[in-house]
Image 1 (cartoon, one colour):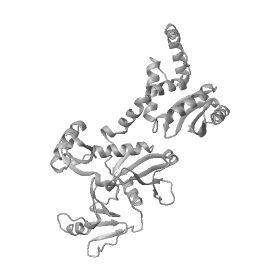
Image 2 (tube, rainbow, N blue to C red; image 1 turned 45 degrees about the vertical axis):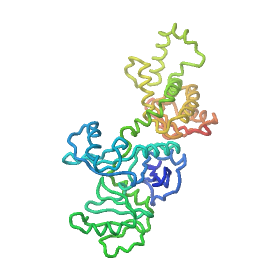
Image 3 (tube, rainbow, N blue to C red; image 1 turned 30 degrees about the horizontal axis):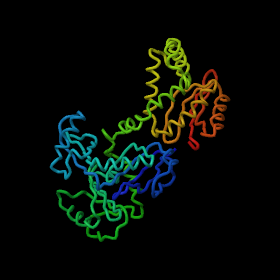
Image 4 (cartoon, rainbow, N blue to C red; image 1 turned 60 degrees about the vertical axis):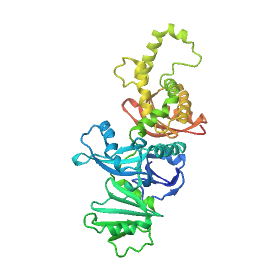
Length: 401
């Protein structure tokens, strides 16, 4: 399992420029790859981080008293209004960790640009955990500036939450101006290859042969950063929007998986007359499926809560989720001696926490899932508990769904 997938976007247009995989267990440095990562790469990553073009992000800080987030978000745009070239109503504001003396790091981006990136990543099946301005992914050393020459641009990081992007032709002029005592850093570290004559400037050349995304990967791992996925663009808001069209369908499928009690073609007028018996059956099935539940007050409401938990854990979702869980539901319902303890979904795979009466029953379930022709199952772990019951993590991957 790879820890992080790092994706970098193009600066001129909404497109994926390159990506690389980062792992704590890697024995060699990551190798950047051009273009869009495949679905297998997306499924392998535990976390997805997107580096957005620094030319589209304005970084600054605002001194505003208080800690209430909603009040800060109302006040900060107008505290910076005179410095901004765009109407604050058209901008998305993201905050960094608050500093001393009521100072708050701020990133501002046009909402239209955020929407373009959001649509691009959605089309590519990318669900990101963080969007970060690329200049804040440069390596950070206290008292120093980091500069990355990348084609016709230079990315500059001047502090934990500060930086900018300039044309590379103006870089020597900037470095010359930095000789002024009031603004001069202790040292400037220049990353990447350059043909500019910098012999007369106080610059240390670093990793001239390294590719830009390799350098940004190193800096991102250092932190700190400002994550642009806040408020209207947060993961919570994104999943709420994605789940809304198929929430009712997902609820029905989850009921089928957990309870196995309602079939298509049921006459609802008959159900009404049998309401008390059905409620008792639902409670019995709920207790069987979730034996760890000590108190069952309202089985229907508690079942809906399980649905919400699954929605929050889903990191892919949409039609693929519905197809995969629907196919798995029938097989699991038919299995004997299997209890579902939990479930999560991420980009083409369904992970189930199970309790089986024996290893043989667990293996039979795996074979039944494989035999369906629509999915492949893999036993990630299996531990025999007291009484010979087995707790297991089972991964199901769609095959042609």
